Length: 466
Image (cartoon, rainbow, N blue to C red; front, side, top):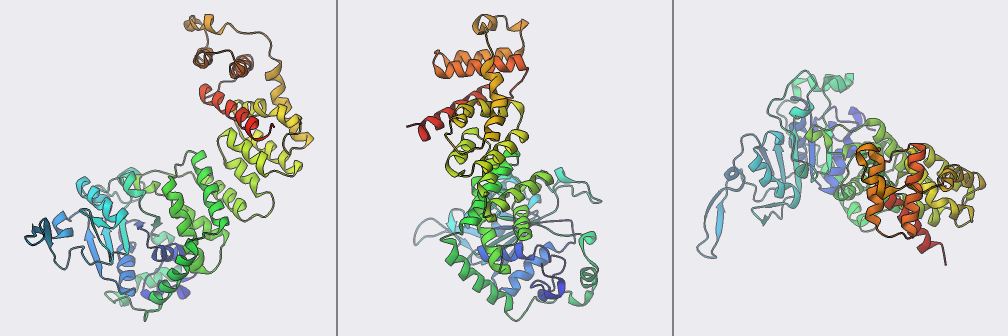
């Protein structure tokens, strides 16, 4: 990553953002919304205003805590010639702007936040398109649900999650402790105060060049970037860190642009872009660092490892039927199949591991898909006790005695009652739940797990059997 002496931003008098400079520049290339988060005095506003100066943009800077809607659109008056309403423009209105900075957006009144939604998401105000608007930027202090530092930003409220999800990238501005000695000296120097950011047009030329390459490549986004994005999104959602389908597309755009900016695809770059693509801090949420690191590692190996990359996708998928589909379609090496199954069984809960073994053991033993003898044996160790449980519990009779039986018994009986008929599905569910009671295994969602077992059986019938 660039240092102060070699960074594009330092040429504009902006210091301390070196590590995330590729992320910031990627937002200039994609023209997707960018949000800066940080303590007061960390240069968020200065950075964004400096970018507008360097790019020669018609810029508008609004303070969200003070802005009225008339400040944004002007004063309405009747359009007698065409009917409807026009707006009286001033130098501060948004019409004609090429870049907009909504400062301290987390202090915005709820009704104004709703109006800003269309501006950020659609480049529209009052349903009217803003054809010249390229960049939508915002800045905020940590919200009141995310305090913990020396300063208390009372009035900085959690951002509406729907609005936050419209921003593509979130850059955390470093405070003093996050600056190296060189950056501290440059930041403290008063010589640059009030100076217009002007690098002789170099950044503007670079952004235009990068943008042309981006528009050429976005039509056929490289498969390994898409693999990285889908794997990371799946892994994060499986870890209960919700990533919306929209955000996966924004992540792919940002990764492509960042790689164009630095001229290569690196592990650390993809990790930085993934981290900067998560909006959770804007509403006071926290993302588990271990889960994020694991998601990146899995996604990186899925997208860039040439051998057995399917294993990472297999492990990332949550639904058992999707795991089975990957195993059937992509595994050609029995040793790799054994490795994948062993890792899955070791990482899952006992109930889910047993359900997968119960649904797949017979097919694996019959050689229906590529898995070695050790893998078949691993599945058999879990499936055999389920298949060997004898005796039929009096599900319906005991259900009426629910006060005297385990709540898990009751939940199992209700699932079987909902199945209705004594067909193959009923028999499989009854067998599995019998084992759960004997082994004292308590699935979190019995109905959902039964449905996953059945989905595996249906997939096997559709894809493997003649």
